[in-house]
Amino acid sequence: MLKGACHCGAVQITLQRTPRTITNCNCSICRRYGVLWAYYKSSSVGLKAQTADLASYSWGEKSIEFVRCAQCGCVVCWKPLGRTQADYRMGVNVRNFDPARLMGARLRRLDGASSWRFID
Ligand SMILES: [Zn+2]
Image (cartoon, rainbow, N blue to C red; front, side):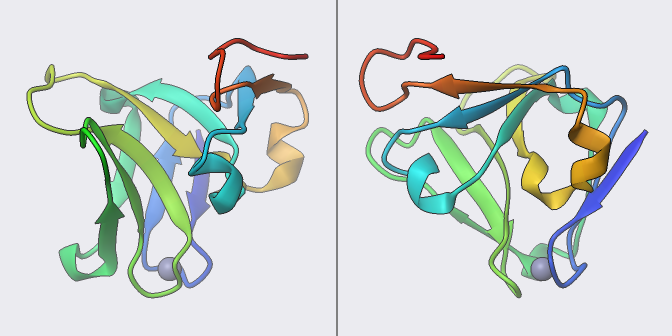
């Protein structure tokens, strides 16, 4: 079990297991946010927050949304919008967790800006 939170603590995140892989993506939004993603099924991610403490951002085709803490601004996760399966795949920003707990994970560089391939 891995517990994390945004900077102010209004959003609490719980993961069932530590990630094996962490993704650093260079796409237009990820490079600006400076996030590191780990991917999980939504059923294994616990998000605890008041509705008023969550804000989101999406653009273009609006197929996914980026969720952040409305108080401190830390990016929490991305998840699909619209028609989705009950147990969907989502990305969790592992920057909200103790770095010492992530030391065993492999860091990958994803070229989300163009080829959608790993470039490391
Ligand atoms: Zn916060």
